[in-house]
Length: 71
Image: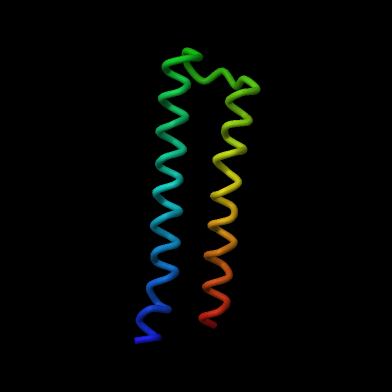
């Protein structure tokens, strides 16, 4: 049981990473189309990207930790 649960953790981290990437991309497209026309990088867009990128980097670090634990 423990081996199966351990092998599932990196897969879950990878799926959440893909989902967060897709969510960030969709949010950016919706925001740029609705508010700013097309892709002018304003300060608000850059700060929103920072707030999206911080949880993504935390997820990547967690993924790397899980992989090093399994080794």
